[in-house]
Amino acid sequence: MDFVPTRPTTTMYLLRHAEAEGHGPNDGLTVNGTAVAEAVVSVLEALEVDSIFSSPVLRARETVQPFAKATGLALTTLPDLREHQTSLQGHVPDDALHERRFTERNLSRPGGESFNQAATRLRNMIKSLSRRPVYAPVLATHGGLIASVLSAMYSDYGFEQAQDMPHPALFKLTHNHGTIREIQPLTLP
Image (cartoon, rainbow, N blue to C red; front, top):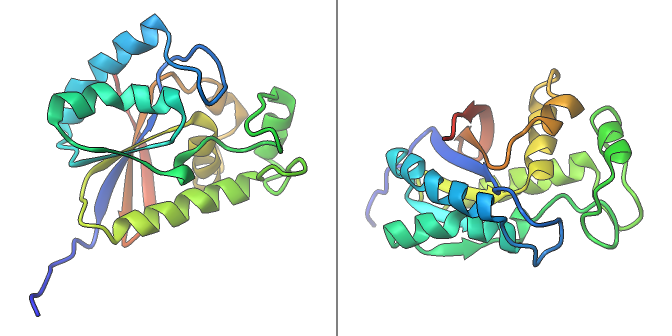
């Protein structure tokens, strides 16, 4: 049996999708969002990203497709990268509810997820990916899901910071065997 060395610390990149036409699962990027997605290619190349995972939602896939095309890397969709589900209807924007979730982390509508449930979903997915032979993947996802994890890790991350998160936004996530250690925002063009 061959010994396969493991890295004690691994990096992943969380990429919030670029500006989109709307919040539905089939809403694609705006013209500006498409241009910005093209500009992100050089940033991801410089980070030596070795694999691409995306939410199945069109706007997230369209944000990383230019990078996939430029590098020849396969784009794999993962349902666990989907937006934070706020109700039985999926993700329904509601700023008042969203703001309360930062202090009431178990709050959810019927059929929806609480911030704690969404953060746990992302953490479990990161643990699962950490067992794969990937060392610097990009995970194209949504602001609500990223905010749920940031607010769980950093007590000073709240509604105002989430509202200010740009489209797209890039975060460097450092973990040890799937346990998140740090999430740092990176600058995009």
